[in-house]
Amino acid sequence: MILQVRQLTKEFDGKAVLRGVDLDLAEGQVKVIMGPSGCGKSTLLRCINRLIEPTAGKVLFRGEDVLRAEADVRALRQQIGFVFQQFALYRHLSALDNVTLGLRKLRGMHAREANEKAMHELQRMNMAEHAHKYPAHLSGGQKQRVAIARALAMDPAVLFFDEPTSALDPLMSREVISVINQLYMDNITMLCVTHDMFLAKYIADQVLFLDAGVVRAEGSAEELFSGHSDPRIREFFIHEHHS
Ligand SMILES: Nc1ncnc2c1ncn2[C@@H]1O[C@H](COP(=O)(O)OP(=O)(O)OP(=O)(O)O)[C@@H](O)[C@H]1O
Ligand SMILES: [Mg+2]
Image (cartoon, rainbow, N blue to C red; front, top):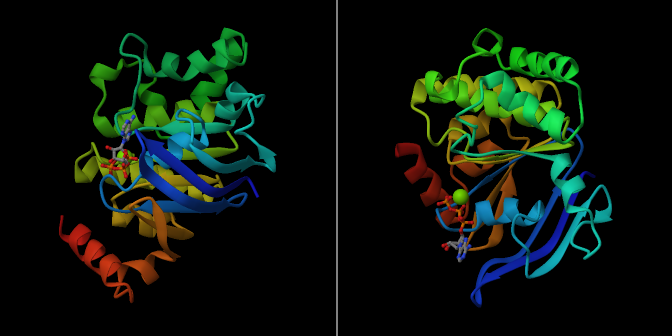
């Protein structure tokens, strides 16, 4: 098991946002987290890699408790690649340099080796021909593919996505969904927050429905999307489908 989350709780100013979340992620598995706005999806991802400190609960990464005071947070974050809705690329760096930066600064790679590795990951994202462009000259879908290449370049054990297609129009979304699907075929372990039912159907081994800080249901995309017995879930997906 890569990740085991147990009874994870997070309170902001005494208000519980996560209320005892359990989640397992096995090697090569892809789980998608869905749920209403504000239910705690981003908070959950951020607690796991300790961008936010949880209030209570356990997070085991490959069996090791990462919430211990003496846990190596930097090492943990290197094991978890993070892809955000808004790409978070450096504007003053080319696509290639956005990908090589971490390799040189965190991994201590020399320029040539870093460039080779970065080009390999950009190629995987069908972005090799745009390697020397700056973010301002890339479409949203292209920027997101650079961001994914950057995350992959660090050889993370797992990739986290927080709404990777939310800032994209439908056409650009399809490009990004297609490369994420490629990663799925390559057995990359992923945990993906999304509102995109199309993306979820494509990649999810399992969909987890988070509601007001608790996991309300877990199942295949089909099980959750079509006529679930829980009316709240049924209503949510009918609404999402038309939004
Ligand atoms: N740093 C913070 N301080 C106080 N409250 C916060 C903080 N971060 C998040 N919250 C609150 O926690 C709740 C969950 O937020 P979160 O961003 O995890 O939701 P989400 O499920 O990702 O929503 P969305 O689908 O809109 O992205 C919200 O009510 C939010 O206002
Ligand atoms: Mg969010």
